[in-house]
Length: 122
Image (cartoon, rainbow, N blue to C red):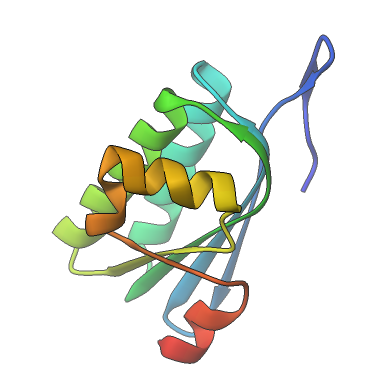
């Protein structure tokens, strides 16, 4: 993953890997309001859905910060995956992110699992 920077804040970086029918989107840096975060994640989703993908795993292990816009993009990715008939899992979120998922109700829609657990469950 190659991050971009603006000022002092580290911006988003994304790496996509495919193993069998599972696409993993590894996300790092700051997932905050702005065209970089939204554009890259939407593009990553588009790359994952045109293949014979049955499951998408979003690895948040290197995310330093996420705001409401970032949560909105995750909700969009979930909706796109489900409408395409794919399983959607969030892997390795921090404790703070899990709390954000619970407060916003997103934990009712997608599963958040520890690092490596998603591949074993698929």
